[in-house]
Image (cartoon, rainbow, N blue to C red; front, side):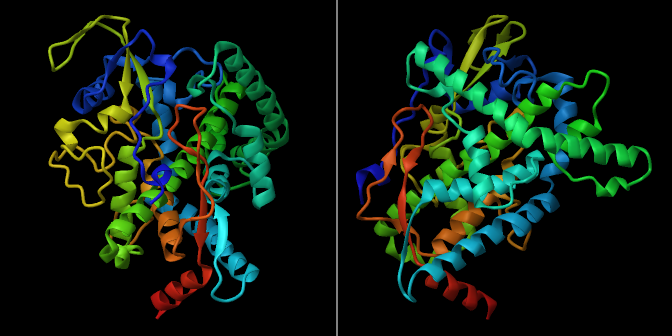
Length: 425
């Protein structure tokens, strides 16, 4: 197996923690995340100001309560059924239409994952007009880019990245956000006047923000919140899908007896959890003490002190994950009842990622949503997805995010069709 594919890299520490006390113990990180005596410790970044990830206390609880309706089991199941699975079906059919029976198809898994997830993210965020590959690509062009705080660059380049981000967001605001906002304002007004039923309102972030708008309505905050949801629903899961596929390919090469489990939802879910543990989508989270705090290990955090919580290191804490903590093992048995298989990949406490169920589903063996990461991983395994031996993957060395810039794979759409027919029978 190519080392670039099979390797589990040591977690990197971003530049933005310089000068801060770092915590890499799993239980201490969890303790800080769950404590009401710590709040947001990030710098006041204009693109994040006032959004769900950086607010705390009552404001955070109320907004999260309102937005939780977007991530109920029924809602997640609808996203998968109506958007994601249709896209996967279309991809498989298009592959079969492009090659002779029995032939394989080469593709870039990074681009595939981004494409599959964009329409789901647009539905959740409340952005209209994203209904095919072209419009999805346009949306990503305007909302994705390098994240200055995690780029391995100097301060001048960070400023250039921020300037580019501002320019692209302005185009997004005109091209996508403004018409979506106008449509929702009209729908909310129709409901308020009795011309329409409340059931006619779409369930998405932007509608919730419009429907709950008061005298202090902030259109710029609504724009920022929508963009945060787009980022959190697309790039993060696409990144994990690549790592999951790479790990499964390496595992099956070393454990061929497990090949029969490649389309077993429980096995792929366990592999997805282990992947998220080893490759958390956020390298670090900064929290700030609102008062003097003594942690359970006896250490004292001064009022106003900021801590850097290192998710990558905490998810490989030997006290929790044992001596094989750096090894991918879908059969890993974590002996701590309070520790999920994916560790701190979705954080913990009040700021647990609101989209956790979107990625991982309900874990109900008798039905319900699989979760986008598991559903995509299963479909790829049904298509026999494997790294292309003639095209090396390209790891993105320009960022502190743990991700590939390109990951060539081979898929067999005819194998996928055979699996579908077997399941139907």
